[in-house]
Amino acid sequence: MNGLGEISVRGVQKIYDPLGSPIHALEACSCDIPAGKFVAMVGPSGCGKSTLLNMIAGFDMPTSGTISLDGELLVDQQTRSRPGSDRVVVFQNGALFPWKTVVENIAYGPIVQGRLNRAEAEEKALDLLEETAGLGRIANFFPGQISSGMQRRVEIIRALINNPRVLLLDEPFRAMDTVSKSTMHEYLLDIHYRFQTTILLITHDLAEAILLADIVLVMTTRPGTIKLGIEVDLQRPRLKAMVVSDRFIELQREAIAAVHEEARKAFERGEKELA
Image (tube, rainbow, N blue to C red; front, side, top):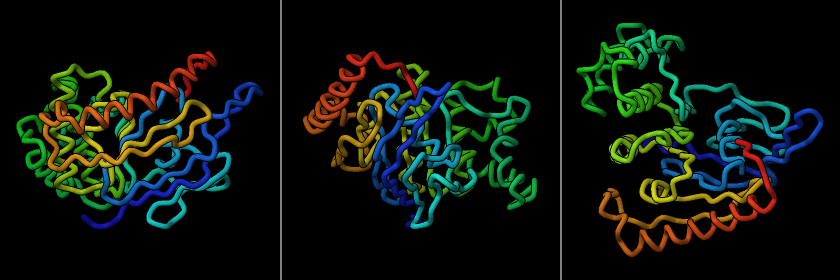
């Protein structure tokens, strides 16, 4: 653990103005994500979870407020840092280059950034592929030749090769079947244990959030802000058997109650989805 990766969100507001009809996505949103911790963010659809993640990543700017990483300003209403290797995003729909092999996909970042030459990057990619996933055998396969679960692991390895301070995961397992999702949970828990990288996961799966995270942040309906922070005091390493423990069920009930209350408000207002 390098002690880096602390995110501070202060008073963030985001107003979209499509066709002159302003939509308040976030309002007075503040939270802290401690370095090296695994944080999950949950809330009703359209509450602004992905909007906030995109601003942390450097893809968008707030209308007001600030976001900092390790005490350095990342973004405010006037400036934003460019997306970089210190914050890497894994999206729901995947982003592997279909024309590149697995090892070429993983090695791409360090080569483009000029940090490693091709031989060095591909050697490191092979090491990570084998060490973290035991998937050295698929190094020369193309993404279309491997399963969706393997593709997700390759994307996470591609992120890790950049030695990021923060790993941002935007519902990466949403489309997976139950067995594949369970395998990915085990893999992600192992990755976090080994690397101690700060992780921010957006998910609609409350059981997933509690199983994986140190802290679960519950967002309100739009305009989104932090309603509640749930400290997940389950011991690590996390095991699947914990999902039937009394404490897990208690935490899950707390999260369900908080999210359900906000989802009901959104339903009553007839809100449409907005990331």
